[in-house]
Image (cartoon, rainbow, N blue to C red):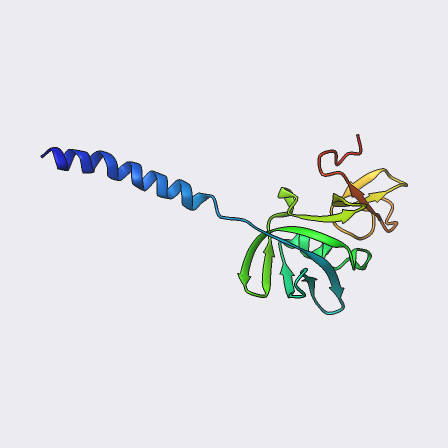
Length: 144
């Protein structure tokens, strides 16, 4: 009878712990040189010369088409979906950073006419002028 009570108390705790562990997926970090391709997904060449194809959410996919980022060293957080495929985590988690002058920077776009910051390349939503690539400190994305 005591064993039955013990099991009834411990089993729910073990179940809750397993749900908590399952709720926090492990994150991989991918570091390497970014290559932007016409009509093909972006790739990263790692230090050991392995080529990994990148994917991500809609915002990340748009960023990965910006040829101005070609050749940058990147740090991406996410998950390997295969040995040569990497799914970058959500853009709102700042999962894709580039290295500039030895420091990791967040990829943003700035319209100096309208003073509008965006997170995808393309024309300004106000004046339609092409937005400038603006790499900013991830701890101070507003420039302050």
